[in-house]
Length: 104
Image (tube, rainbow, N blue to C red; front, top):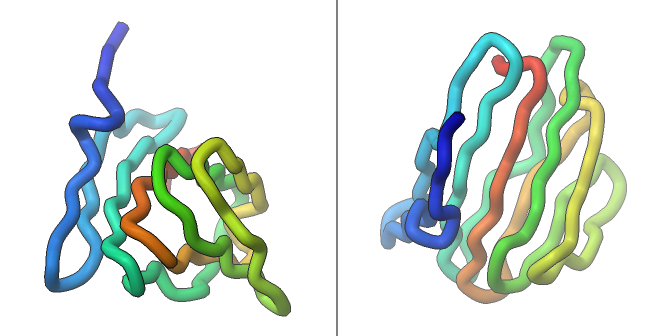
């Protein structure tokens, strides 16, 4: 069993978003991303099977999809196949938790 304090794990950086690996196993990967206002994880996809979940822990921004943007605020959750294009853009400082299963 493992415990992590998600709000303590969020890393903000001036030059690009912060990323913290919280958990990595053969079954799943869990990461925390800290975005300052205006920073983003560009739209991208992975050529493999699995799913990704992105939950907004704090702040607000947008989930990026192939043909649209979806408003995102604290408490919102996006779940997608990992092969489906996805990304995040912060409007305010924003902390998100990403889970990938199986891990890449």
